[in-house]
Amino acid sequence: MAQDLRNLFENEEKNSQLKMSEGHEARFLNKLDSALPEETSINKRFSVLQIAASIVILIGLAFGAYKFTQQPKSIENQVVENQNQTNDDQLKSLGDISPDLKTVEDYYLANINLELSKIKQTPENKELFDGYVVRLAELNQEYKRLSIELTENGPNELTVSALIDNLKLRLNLLYRLKEQLHDLNTSDESVIL
Image (tube, rainbow, N blue to C red):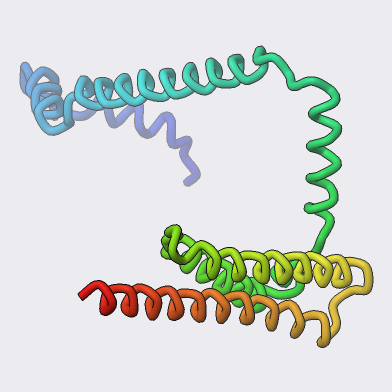
């Protein structure tokens, strides 16, 4: 009873009375063309993206070539800059210990810089301002010394708390300077009136 399927299908085609009507293939192709989206819109979109990508690559290559062909700095300047960078780069900061301490350090440094930018120096407050600047410079040197200690000895509770206290003290000094400048300005205004 086993029959070869190939023979069975060949015989079926010969015996079959069903035939497709004329023009069936043409109608099918027309329906297929109307149902499928045109390829031209996709090709246009891809060609625009290809042009944009090519422009970006060319700009990148041009920038790289420009940087590569620039005159290098003199060797003496590079050595001095590298020595300064290595000394500062090798120092550990609070951010190197933990992300939480980095957040604290960034908060204080941002507020210190903000307060410094808000202070206006005038001839009347120059002496007061200079006194605070000297104290801030001393605190900055102490902070660097503590950072060196942190780098050499590793993190310990005393050094970390001293670094944070240093930042707090600098910020409090700036707040105090700002208050004294405000008091000085208001007293000057009341004398003028």
